[in-house]
Length: 236
Ligand code: DC
Image (cartoon, rainbow, N blue to C red):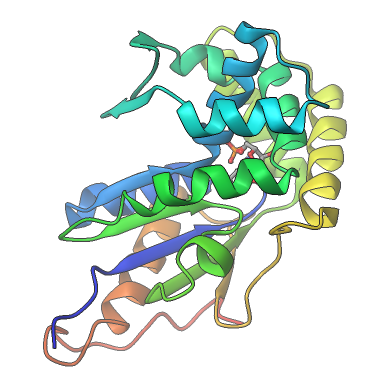
């Protein structure tokens, strides 16, 4: 029997570092990478452009179904225009969090996310990678960090991109977004029972990447594993 294409699912709240960790793990393994949050952000941007309101569930689901999105390396395109920087603005973050609560939007994005699962493997990051999109993922990580350290990282990211940022506002927005992502009915942000908890508050990116790589190596099928135990710290 052929093995399914392996998936490493990394879920967690915004600015927990999962994007950086997931993309570096993907690069280290030579696997594909899915930033599922970017899809929700793209729907938010498409809605703004088409003047579709956040209360128009059918209109948003239609936009999600027809989304003309493309990913190439670190670049993201909507209708053939590069929009990576635009997607990171706080207004788009807030809108994405709101429309991500709509079941029809989530449903419309499901197959598009699953299409990223191609050989030799996929590292997927988001809120429901391990719970809904790839429940059979071989490796599942729930990555967290304190709200203060996440706000600090987000502040740094925004400043580096030349975008306006205020620490107090960021902290408040993060808390609001966490509450909304965790309280929603459809695919709420929650650690799956089979996910390993990784708290990166006091960790470097390199340590977090090494942790996930070691964990994934320990989860390989016997026929392909080179041996070696999984990580010792941080598992729950
Ligand atoms: O990871 P991010 O901050 O780019 O995600 C933007 C929003 O999209 C976030 O508020 C929650 C939502 N999201 C989601 O509901 N499910 C996912 N798999 C990824 C993101």
